[in-house]
Structures are given as structure tokens and as C-alpha cells.
Length: 469
Image (cartoon, rainbow, N blue to C red; front, side, top):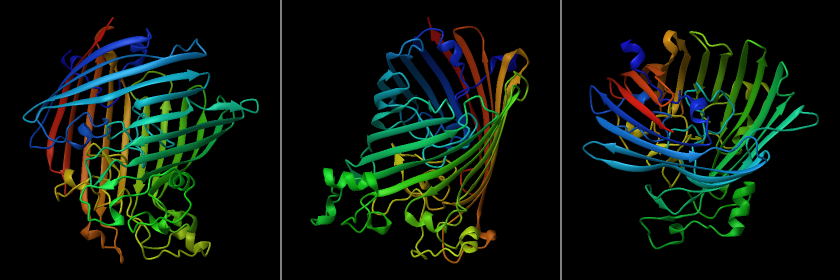
């Protein structure tokens, strides 16, 4: 009985069906977080949209209110407001989500800070999509796009796109910089077909802004006029500043080219996916094509002890340090060799971060969150990481999820370092959740880190969620 009272879903295993019984909803979460040292475990704080602090112990209070879209209406509106407070030695208040949106059929426009992930894969059990993982607080944006795949040609092709303009915060070296973001994904095959193929890309750019420590030169301010925006949009033109992206493009460009294959029947769904990251035109030389996230997920459609399994392998050990096997086979030339791509880091700016947390996969740990220390960059970003995620339902309707990662970390250098110099890291967590009644849910998580990149620790979280009528 005690097990059924200790339940967790701060990792995202909530019960949305209960919350969506009515369009308007309000809830309050109260959580206690702690660990054996000053740092919360990796799987306690990661993929939580920046709402769980790195340091502990902490009490967390989170209040959420909003309105869902009415699925029966062609035209409707939605809003969400969530506030999160940390009660500890250094207390903090966060506006962790706030947006308003309008839909018309399959299309929508929204403005504000909304929780989202970007990429192709299993969103329920992933260790984090490479580019945009839900690890940091949502960034304020103006967004237009589809709500899901829009079907054409008798539903044999689905189109999903987004286009957004956002604003970075001013916590790093550059103030008032912008985000340009867009994506386009295609599904081949009808939604109910046994087989589906997926193909798409996403593109993000940090651009504009000015240095906080001006030197009195033209390098103090990045261009941000409309002419610059058109070059940011198309990825063309030559920038004028030395810390713009490789090939002298305006701003710093980051994205992924994604592929997927899905098999489904009445009992299960299997998804094989690949995210190929890029930070410059070098992706077309196939020099870095072996870098990326490869995943295989299984979802079972009946409630049982095991309802889903996710396997992922993240490799970022190339980064331009050597030619890929495929590039060699096709005799492709890399004109930028031996420059290093250096994923999630930005020359002249801080890394791809928002509100002090990484926007990309949490597996690439930010320096300031590591044993080695540092700032808002990702020094040890050449990784080889294996991940297993499993979820299901135990007797008494106790939902559970386990996560395990084993990762090796290194600098991206030429020549490549010996494996004996890699930093090794193991992280694991077990989360449990039970909905006691329509209003009350209880959660519990235990997690541990052992290795060289983050501090060795054992900790977890205990939480209560109450939904108001």
C-alpha cells in the first residue's frame, strides 16, 4: 500500500485524460527534492523544462491553470499559465509556462512561452532530442504552424511545419539576441497504414544582439535589420563579424536532418528514427554524418507491466575530426577540415542555452553542472551514450518508468583521444505514479549518478498533485 501512495510523474508521466475531461483546468503540485550531496541527480533535474534546480535540497510548488482547445470546434482558443517556486536557501520564482493560442482547423498561431520538443522520435521515453529537448525553460516566441500532420493526397502524405521568432534571455555574453526557428516534416503513408516513412528537418539560428562588454568597435553589435533576417532565414550571405557561423553566415546555425520508419498493428507500434545534427554546410560533405541520435522504440497498446521500451544511441565523437565511413566510400571532400563543429557551443556567444540550462539533449552536460566546473558552454561534447527507457503499469494502477544511461565524454580534438582518457558516467532513475482519485495524484522518484562527469549522488523526489474541479 505504501508503494501505491508513493508515485511520480514529474518526469512527464501525468494523467492527461483526467485533466482534459473539462476544457478548463487548474492544478497544484507540491514536491520535495533532495540528494546525498549538493547536486540533484541527472534524471531528477533533466527534461523538466528548467523547473527542477540543479542544487538541492529544495521544495517545489507549481501552480497551473489554463484552457484546452475544444476538439469539436474548427476555430477555438487556448491558454496556459504555470508558475513555479523553489523554496530553499536561494528561493526563486519562475514563470515556467505562459502562452495564448488560436487554432483554425489543423493550423494554429500562438505567442508566449510554451513547452515543446523539436525533432523526430519517441517523445514519451527519449533521453532528449538532440536540438530541442525540453530541458530548459520554454523560450518566448511567436509561432505559426500546424498542430499535427495535415493530410493530403487521400491521406497518403502528411505535412507538419512550424515557423517561429523568439527572444533569448540576457544571461550570457550577448544581450537582446533573437531566435529564428523553422521545421518541415513529411509522413509517407496513411496515418493508419502498417508502414510509414518520415523525413524532415529543423533549423535554428541565434542572431542579432550586442555585447555586454563593448570594446568600442563594430564588433560590439550584431546586425539585426530586415536584410540580415532574410539571410538568416535562407542561410545565405556572408556575415561581417568574426564570430558568426562557419562559412561566414549571419548568426549561428544549428539543426538536424531526421529520418524515421514506423510499423504498427493492433497490438503495438515500432519506431526507428535518426537525428543527424548539423551546424554548417559540412553536413553535405557527409564528413560528420556518423554523428547523431539513433533510436528504436516499442509501444504496446494494452495496459500491462511493460507498455513501452526505448533504446537510444547518441554519438557526437566526429565533429569534423575525421572523415566518416560513408564519406570515404563516396569519396566526398570536406573543405573545412580540420575545423571542429563543436556542437551546442557558439563562437563569441555562450552555448545553446536559455535561463542557464541547455536547450539540446541533456546528455551533453553543461560545464557548470559538471564536476569539472565552468560556465555556460559544453566542453566535453564528444560523447558516446547508450540509453534504455522502460515504462508500464503495475497492479493497483501504479505507473512506472525507469531510465538508464551509460556515457563516455571527451573533448572534440585532432587527433582523437584514446578511450582511456574518456570521462565515464552512469545515471539511472525509477519513477512511480498513482492517481488516488480524480483530484489527487501521488509521485515518487529515486535516482543516482556515478562517474566522472557529474557528482556521485543518490536522491529523488516526492510529490503530490491536486486538481481542482
